[in-house]
Image 1 (cartoon, rainbow, N blue to C red):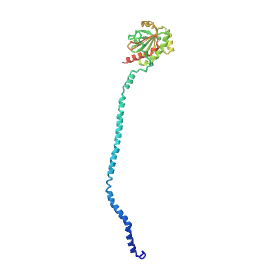
Image 2 (image 1 turned 180 degrees about the vertical axis):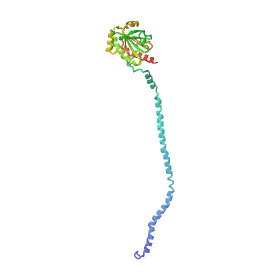
Image 3 (image 1 turned 30 degrees about the vertical axis):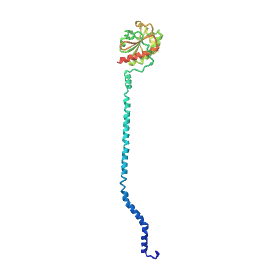
Image 4 (image 1 turned 90 degrees about the horizontal axis):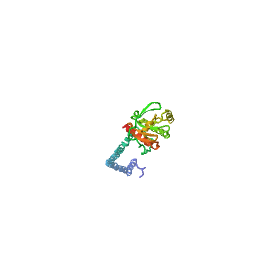
Length: 261
């Protein structure tokens, strides 16, 4: 029997018989899968531990964050000893140096054998003399200052070398209260003023110091004393000794420091 001979009903019946061999099996396979779907959905709660595993990871990621926060704190703690080291006594030393108000020394070399000639520890002798301009100058008028008292004369070649050096040194400490008084044996002002102008000497000048020089019993010119603010001789220097200028500066500085106390 062919399909042409069969009525349409028979064709439909034949198709319905063949369909289970292909489509139904497929549907049957899908049916169990759909049935298994609820079973696979049942394990779906099992993935729930997976988010649970995510949850520990979150705190784990959070844990480094606080540790990172602690680290700067620890770094600050590590830096704290450094500031404690800052209040060094060295900071106190500059303050003490600043408190003295003295400029840096001009001479680094100090010959300790200098400055120990006759007169150290005694009071400077009083005097009252005239300046080249005719004004009065006395030891009493210098009270309260640190004085480098120099005896010289225009006739003395070593004196002419030494006085400009002393003038430069004492000018360095003028604002701190030091003064240079140069007492010449000359009685006439012309040569004294000429030399002072030529060498730009700013010291206080006095004339007619021959008699006063004799009282100090110094055989050689020039000679000098560093006298503190109380009028006491702190350093005595007989003759011109260039190697002693560092010690003269030290005597001046020491006297100025003691004056401030």
